[in-house]
Length: 260
Image (cartoon, rainbow, N blue to C red; front, top):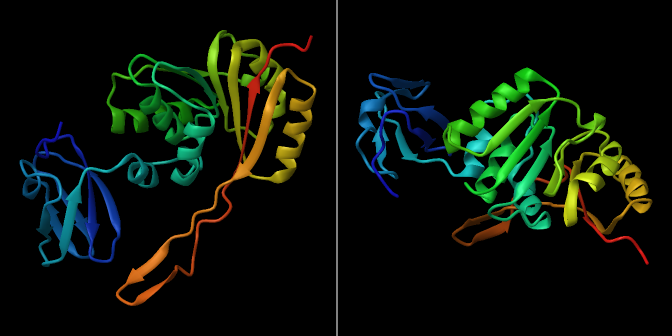
């Protein structure tokens, strides 16, 4: 429910040049930048969308970050999957409220946070991550946006060695060699379950597709998502000179019944 800003809230400050700064409100806290100092007290108790001034008179707008904005600004160790791919992952993977999802390659927690919001409080996200420091950072980032009460379990382990869980609805992979997980996913997914992989190069995609061809998975598709924004200002309407082109390839497949 909408409510005024309070101590502990994450707030996105946007300046006149559209630069964004993610801050956590604290009693007696202050945000320092080259445009001056903004006391947190100027925000606490006020409604989202308020415009405030720094000590040097610079104007800033304060809003609660959307999930997309939070992911772009949150602390990171590993490279995150960008919002332009996160939306398609939810759709291609058909991640629904109540789903049981295994994610391997948790990294900084961008995909983890997105999956958790999609599965809701009745679902479950099980994370496999090789590095303890990445697992810890991911959990902090998740809790920074969703709070501590989330259905998330992160285990420090190698998914290439196997998956313990069964009757999973979805397996989502952000790994360099996902073909090594195909047999494990086949044994762990329920019939009709979906395997989805995010990969940076087409060579990796080709190797994954080879493995899927000799498996019980079918209905396989690979694609990439390109994002082009537009400049719209008065009579000046044109595509922006820069666009977010290739970031990664998405490959998804369904677990099918054995052929008869």
